[in-house]
Length: 515
Image (cartoon, rainbow, N blue to C red; front, top):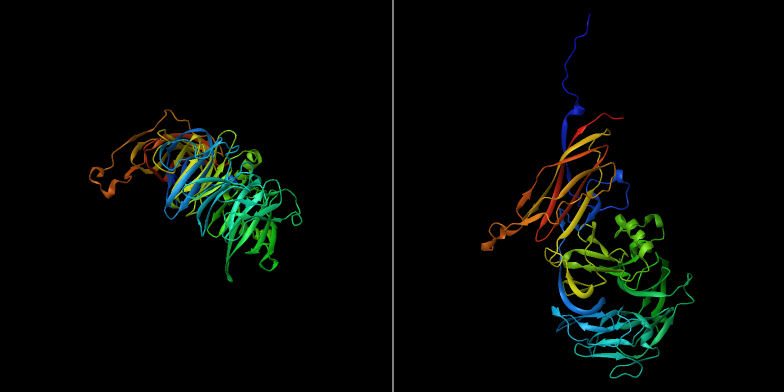
């Protein structure tokens, strides 16, 4: 008896399927194998900021102070009960850049270096901004006037050490501490004093790896026993000497609490305070010192830069000698910024402090950073800029790229990708360049024009409506082509005056035969 032939219809693998991938809110991932990345991560995420619920085109920057004679390599903010003043060091001078616009004459001139470290310090005699650079005498600002502090200067002087030898400065429990350049000496002043006789601590007999003191930080430890601030001295080789107490002149109130090792730090501005912890930029990435206290290395988790630690390490290997390494916290912007002075152009790794996701910002050519209140400022070439504001880069378009983590879309066989669409909210007509990269390709889509947006006036804006925020959903399908086992949506756009919140990506494909 012959078998009956049954028509079972087209093969399942020939049916076109559509899958949706969330926007890469998990941020940039430079740690995991491409094939093992979560769908919410990205291989490339430039100028797109990962929020908990979407990925947004980053804010821009605007010109703040212009007309400086050379590159701005230091920004220092003076803060007191009566207000704030922002100063920029460029070339041989220090300039008042508090007000927006062209700068006037230098408030301090005749200097040899513009790479300053600074601290705000309050005494019964007033609030001061103290600055050192290892080449020039300490500069002191009291809210009205500047003075160079030397052993014979008036009204304030420091004896015991030439202040031109001091290259780093910190405040700890009511005392100013300064590090002498190319040495293991840390100098300290009398309690609640901006001047006077300086005494020193010499750590040469304590360190085991040699080098010199790079920085001193105040580290607050919070545990079951309460909170306590400790003085942490970091050497150029990554040794950390941790002291507890308040008066170095007395052994009963100043003693070595611990000694441990972290990755070699880069630059004098190698640390940032994050809550009560301190994170250091070095060979371990942006590494919190609280993790270094764990004696079992298997318990250590770099909670700050874990996903991008390999990227930072590679940058440190290539650019550690370049000036400009700095980390800064921008609380109101929910951002932690790590400045990377790459030879090919400065960029920043930026973490969303709400969800811990990272991305990279390009186009901000920053030499240094500072906060003036809630305003994030950076020094560039002959100008100071306010960052993380506005919808353009000082009038220019913002170029953003993203490549999402590769996905197998539930099957191991080959696929032919046919169509895709990014879904986002925007106040502009934006059509990004879009493609599907197959089998771990990292090619960024090419833009066909310099700009891809036309700004709309949001509905209700003329009446000050609360619905003036981006309310247009963009979900245009685009033809794509690619044949491979894994596919990664890739996008590029070049826009200005546009708000864009990326929500998801839909991908259409046809399954092929498994090999």
